[in-house]
Image (cartoon, rainbow, N blue to C red):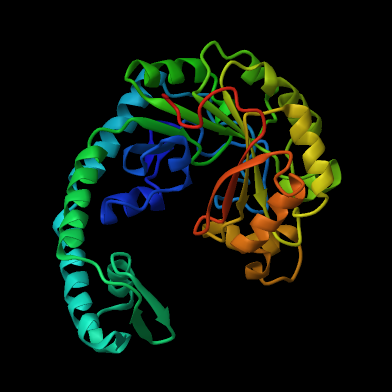
Length: 370
């Protein structure tokens, strides 16, 4: 959803999942963030200093606006919150509650047979996927197999959780400034953060690290600053990021050097692409140790939207699915970087997001606000 001149808002997959199910949360749950209360937004939708081959957006437009008009911070925050709430108010949670009713009916059939063919359910493929999230089953080809029993009260708890998360979503508390573009190109970031903080929000910024001077000049810091580390060295960086500025790698290195001095929580995120930047773990390790962030994330590349053009962007005839790492790939690569977790302690992992979180130099609790 476009907002103002160059801002945008888009509820993410996990926002919807938390409201649909009441319990499924994204990996930010490790940091204490409720997906139903998270606004995914950007003040700088179309501008970036990179054209990363794995980016899910079409970021070929460059680093300058056609007209130098920026949205005012207070108006942006008000618009982000209002539009998010409007989206929630437009939902019909009765449809989500109905999924629980259907799940309970399917469960009754499974109690009798222990095994059911999916075709017997008479449901669409999409509806089957939604219903199975509430059931303790495994799926083998075209059959569902019950693996444990649950009580009627548990289905009632699902309904209560869905209603609760719908109410929570009407009161957003977190801003993930990460939707698209390079947010640190927005000239009023301190003011934007301040407006969010005045309203009791926690804030994350995800930056590509090519604007260290803008980070250094912030009067107000986000509650957590993510820096994407897309490569272990300059050669791979040039191939992966296709930078629109000549000294992108050097600027990223300056940002890494800044991290330890910032009075906020810091995270280095490696967006891992199989056969491309999942290599040289020792070089990644040295860069992480040099930056000394609070945390290190290794997260698998997601084949979504324009990211499906990764082969074209690389100029190679390759099936993009071959570049998507499994969770096992991510776990193994994380172990290699942290020398089997002896250097950076593993906090947790999220198999569905293909994500591993590690402590590097934690200076406080993992969860924001504790």
